[in-house]
Image 1 (cartoon, rainbow, N blue to C red):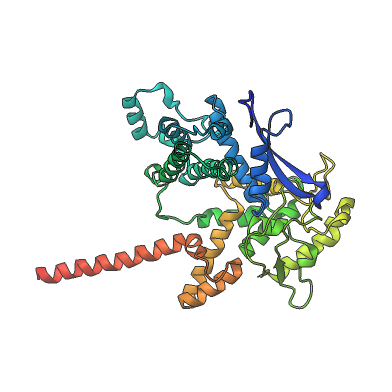
Image 2 (image 1 turned 180 degrees about the vertical axis):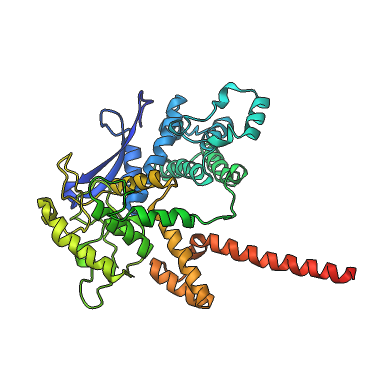
Length: 430
C-alpha cells in the first residue's frame, strides 16, 4: 500500500523516454534507482503531463522536500490518505514551520533554532541570525502548494469515486483548508523589501561585465572558449532574451542574409534532436530579436571556423556547443548548467552576482531610458517591450522587469510633491 518510510536520501531522477522520441521524464527515486512510489510516479508523469518539462522538474524537487520532511517524521503520506486519517492541526502547523525555513543544505551559516529558548529566538531574530535562514516567500509557498496538490491528486483517485464518509471528508477538507489558509500567512515572514532602491544590475558592474567578456581583455577569466563565451553573453545583453532561448538557438534561426541582424526565438517543445538531459525551453511567444550586424558576423565566423572543429557538432544544428572534452561531450549542445558556470565565473571577477535574467532586467531598464530620451508614450513603449520580450498582449510582466525605473520615477514624483508642500508652507509664513 504505497511507499514505505524509507531510509537514506532520495533524489530527483531525470531520464529520456527512448520509446517516445526521447521525451524527457522525471521521477523521485531511492539511492538504488527505485521509484519511491507508484503514486509519486503517476503524479509526476500523468497528472502533470500537460506542463512543461522544466516546470515538472521544479515540482518534483518541491515534492521531494515534502516527502523527505514527512519521512523524517516517520509519516507515510499515502497510508494517511488511504486510511482517511490525513493530518492533525499540530502536524500541519509543524509542516508550515518547516516550509518557512531554507532546506538544511542552505543553512550552513544559520543558527540552529532548535537549541534556543523563545526569548533567545526573539533576540536572534533582531540580530539577524535566524532571519538569515528564512526562505523566500515564493519558495515556502511552493512547498505548501505541492503538498496540497499531491493530497488532492491522491484523494481524488483513492476516495472521490467512493461514497466518502463524513469523517474522511472532514479530515481531508481540514488539511486542504489549513494549507490554503497558510499561504496567506507567508507574507508575515517575507524578508525582502518590495521597493527597488537601486538597479538590479548597477552600471558599474554592468560596465565591468562589458569589459571583461572581451576576448582580448586581460581580466577575462576563461582559459578556453573565450570567443564562444563572448558571443553568448553579448547575445543575452543585446536581446534581453531568456537563458533557454539562446541555449536552444539553431543555425537555421540565424538570419545570415538581408540586413544580417535578426534571430528567431522559436518554441520547440520536446525537440527530438535535443540530446541534453535538461532540455532548454522558450517560455515566451515566438518572436524575432534584433542583433547588431557586427555581432551576427562574429557568430557566423564562430559557426564556420570554431564550431566545425568538433565532429559531434555535425550531428545537430544548435549554435553553441560544448568545447571541453573531459567527458567526451565536445561538440554536443551546450548545457544550461554550463551557461550558469560561465556567469558564475564572471561574477567572481566582477564581485557581483550576474546571471541571464539579470541581463534581461538591465535590457528593460536601458529600454526605458531610451524611451524617456525620445519622449515616447507609455503605450508605445509597452507595445514594443512586449514584442521584444515575446510577451502576450495582456501580459503584466513589464512592471516586474521595470521596477527600478518605476521606483525612480515615483521617487522623483514624490520629491516634486515635497517641494510643492514646502513652498506652500513658506508662503504661509511670509
